[in-house]
Image 1 (tube, rainbow, N blue to C red):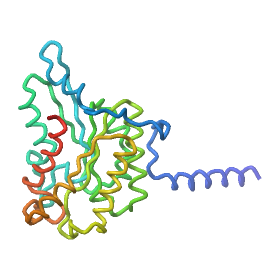
Image 2 (cartoon, helix red, strand yellow):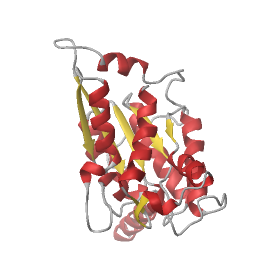
Image 3 (spheres, rainbow, N blue to C red):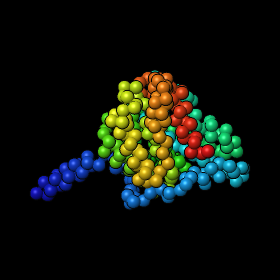
Image 4 (cartoon, rainbow, N blue to C red):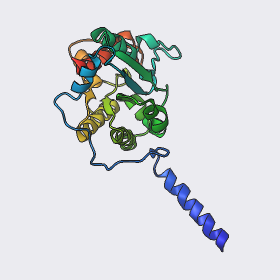
Length: 249
């Protein structure tokens, strides 16, 4: 009888674990209502820190978490890290703040979606003690669906907010297999989901998708910004980097 009870208990635990794919290991989840404080410029304090000179300055760290695009994949399997938007952002920010000590860490993995990203968020991202975390997973989240993806993004946001770390959300870069001007395309729906999360948590948003929509709407060909169907080229990465840099103007 005792063996039967133990077996039922184990089966219950397994079933429960399968129902929470984005629950991170040893990660305490804060109350859902906790959000970033609403500010006119959420980076005002950080920009002041970037202006400090030695010996009053400190290392300021940005972490980019996501899939193959922030990882720097161009035409698979070629990786061009120095032409990716995290590095382009890093270079320009150093130019703007020449007395700052700026570190950019990249925890992105090619082929990953937010389910896997959320599971390793505490160990791979928060342990770096970042000042700002950028999240970019929409392209691959089409495989897991809107609801699951939003739950996983929400889990990562909550973990960061609990540590008082600023989070910036990114809508996707284009995929030439979808019409970027179609509001009902899968990527458009994932982009809207990220906008909703940014509003829910009062987070800064880098709306890359809207910017590419604007460029295509004005007559550009989306392939001018792509190295393959779902990876930006240098020009595409620059579009995203410029959107991020606008937060620091």
